[in-house]
Length: 119
Image (tube, rainbow, N blue to C red; front, side):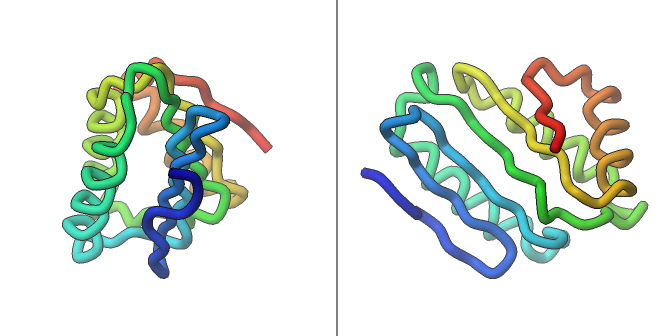
């Protein structure tokens, strides 16, 4: 299976077999009310691959600033990504400077073990 698995207004999830990647692109901000649907889509997508052989790429290029009330949720989501058992995790920083700082702080709080990619 190659190509888009989920294509929603706030995010896309793609399995790239040749690259052995599950790539998630986040657009804007995933609010708390979007989170349940996002998690269902994520679970459905990652069940289609052998996570030990695939990398997870989280592309936050178009992610916006997270409200302070959701910062804890960001930490939890990043921890969840780390617990999924992927070969490696690559996090692409957002272009927004404030969102970059928020993400960097969250990654430090959870002691992120993946690779961070700057623009």
